[in-house]
Image (cartoon, rainbow, N blue to C red; front, side):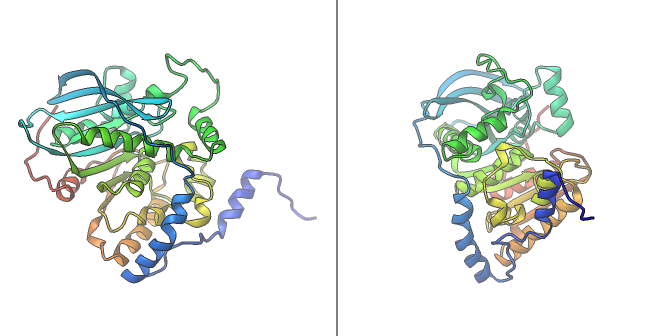
Amino acid sequence: MTVRNLSPQQMFIDLVKDHVPEYRFTGRSKGEFASWKRRAFPKVMATLGDFPDKVLARPELLAEWEEKGLRRQRWIIDVQQHISATLLVNYPLDMKRGEKRPAILCCHGHGPYGKEPVMGNNSSEALRDDIAAHAYNYGQVMAQQGFVTYAIDWIGFGERNDNQKPNHYHMTGRDWCNLYYLHATMLGMTSISINVMHGIAATDAVTEMPGVDGSRLGVMGLSGGGTMTLWMALCDKRFKAAEIICYSDLWAAFGIRDLNYCGMQVAPGLFKLMDLPDVQGLIAPRPLLIGIGAHDACFKVDTAMRCFRQVEKIYRAAGAGDKLELDLHPGAHGWGGNKSEAFFKRHLKYSRKDHAGD
């Protein structure tokens, strides 16, 4: 008797077993890299769909205070027609009048509190637990090390989650991250294209602020924030260096097999064109630091390292092997932070001594 399968999930697992993406990089030379990137890049960008039109940010300062060696600011800005975002900015207190520092966009991942723990908000037990679980306050730590840092909520998170006040669109058992993705695709966009444009709007606003050198910008993020780090770096060449934390793996493993992805990470048809390491390789030759947790339960270390080795091949072919670094740390799904300071100081050309903080 023929064995039949009634599981759609098993069908997808079987479909990707022998799948070879159309633009998998197999070259070795600079010329092959340049040709591959020239052909593949526009195809990959097209999977994001349409981008929202740019609007004037019209920044309004809501609050400013000093805490933990930092001057913290909370702004509200317009990021797209019909929607705004709260923007958090951390400045080191030791900045001199007229001085300009490099700035780092700190992307949050998939969690209820959005940008808040990333930028160092530990005002509740839940926020403190979130920070402790993932070493999640890199937006605070990097500012204490001398950089200006900034962050917004991506749609579906923090203050821009419709389950939160004042919106109260309660949807029990539904993830707004996925619902917004469905809304976006109906309009020819994706959550990624919307979030990228919002990140660009935040960057536009920050680079107009005193103390920020708009020619020295970096971007970093954990998990879903690693997703956004990847796409911000690809879509906005102002970012001179990027750190992708715990978002290195193979789509067949973390996506199809483990179901470890959501609407904020999906570009329709992308896996037909490229697997994740090749998408990361499109950042080359710009500097890239990849963080992998040896005990990460979300992005398993075996396939995460296979991802890194493919990125490494791409960077070597691009003649930029020295621009790629790995922070393989002995932790779980979180920021290792072992190389971040030195990496961004080197590539954003910031040579001041460390600025200690609490």
